[in-house]
Image (spheres, rainbow, N blue to C red):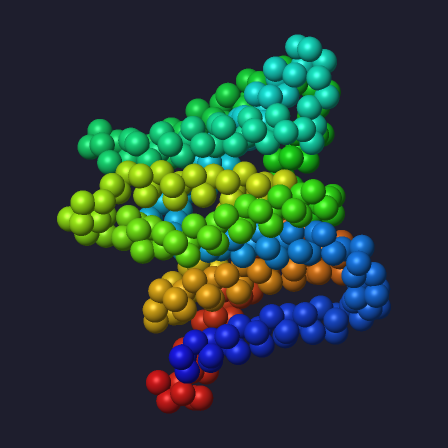
Length: 312
């Protein structure tokens, strides 16, 4: 418990320090940001809540040793979005922001995750080669469909690469619902998910179906990644999956600490990324990755500081 309290204080200080650094570098813009915080309420909450759920899933992804699964799922979701716009072009449908777009992205992303879950245990497929095939095939199909879709290219780019500024209340509510589902599933199935990720042999010895646990876990990956694409974009989503979980796994001494640290950083890295993006007019996704990198670098100091304060 003492160690958990130390880490909570340590990463809270980093979060506060990065905020104060931004205030020191750009005091006038920082004051303007704080005075008009209601204008950024939906984007900040969506980034915080969505990042929390994504970082939690990142722990499972790293334990599964399938880091690039998130890229394959995101690419599958992108293919689904292109497919819906391509079909809509035949009937002159205006499909942007419609349920069909999300459903198409979710279906193709689920298909990519299901294929990986079903084929990864076969001897004829290595995990890395399978992920590479899914990514390359999806990318090639996206290029072919994109060549036939010209008028909706801006709308597709908005959906695939994210736009935190354009988050609407309905996007926030949807993010809350998806993150709530992730948290509830984690509470009730965390043991099964952990064993399926790190020790599937134990689950089999207890007579439990590892394939079902992995499919459920991959379904949550798909929901989290697909819903986060519009808010953060593909590359920031990948950073939010990998970096908080990597720091937490390296620094924590228990699985409980791991999840808490990862979720803390997942919640506040998007907020700080948006804050720095506003201060210096940088792309939000790039600022988010920069803040995550700073957390990674500063986490190296943790062990030295811990030795001083806790004598360990």
